[in-house]
Image (cartoon, rainbow, N blue to C red; front, side):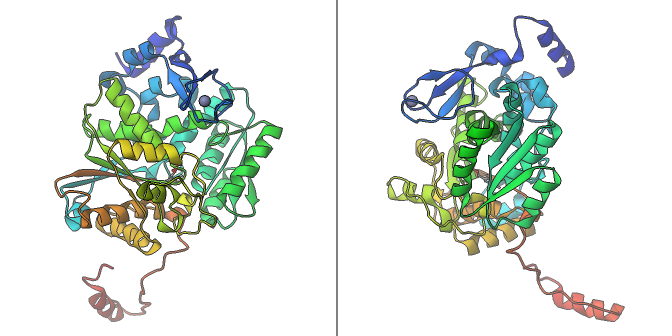
Length: 428
Ligand SMILES: *Cc1c(COP(=O)(O)O)cnc(C)c1O
Ligand SMILES: [Zn+2]
């Protein structure tokens, strides 16, 4: 049966409204259940809430064949996404981005196989389109007329674009000093930008208080349990694109730790429903200048918030990471590492990926490549491994820390020829 016919058949069977695959919210710490509302933490113990699905519906529809016939975006995984598929498909439909086999990079770094999951090509050029695609239709379903977020840049653009598509108003709270390109795109999509003095954590706090007063659905705050579900599609896609085989290792950039936590959850769900038998280890990386999760993991201590997060990887500059504890647990359970390369290594990683593979990532991607290189060098990654790097944002969104290499200005062919002779063979 074709995909369209299948949807029609499903829509016909009155016994199965698509949204009925979602059961409730549940506290990850104490297990207390909540109805599906606008809430992100437990009233009793402040633990994070997670979405619970109806197992029988998921077992029936979350199968390889059904998924492979689905649309070429995140909605092919609808039984494990908490919003209605039909309203979801009215959005910008991110996902099914390329998984690139990076042979030049693998040769350069000296391991068997490196794949890049290239989320630089999503609708607003970062992976944030995934969680937004799930949480914005959820906001509508919950009766909200305004959406927004606290953002280090990429989420602002993703939320603004989705709000435009769904004709909602949108307000984004950002710290001072974000790259102009990210803010520009956000305002072009028509969102209201509120710049907050101080760091991301201040923006987050103010957003939280304002949202309560004005009933704004903040995708990564009061809608967080739904939001994080969108990100696990990265894990689903990687495994599907490797023909339902897990790689040995996935390296994930961490800001709040939500993406890494979601990737781990996605892998667990694939295993639970029999779509994979692997055991990939999930590894995290943060810029050394803002690495509260990696430091806590490596020192075996509690997370100590970073007061002044300042790094070229501004999309990862979150000093007080909301999902840090969960990220640490995921890394530990899967035998992964947590790393923290310097800003210099991050830029070098960015250039390496561009020059070996033709992929221009933002510094968050450079952070991943830097850690890959460091961990191969120190022996933590073996040369026979298959490693997947999540490249989560596009380099054109954040360029102020990059410089041109010197180039000539010529007036005659002979000048161009001698210039080329001096440049020949030089790559970087
Ligand atoms: C937001 C973001 C991340 C990490 O997200 P968290 O879920 O906060 O850990 C990674 N890369 C890019 C480009 C991002 O914008
Ligand atoms: Zn609880």
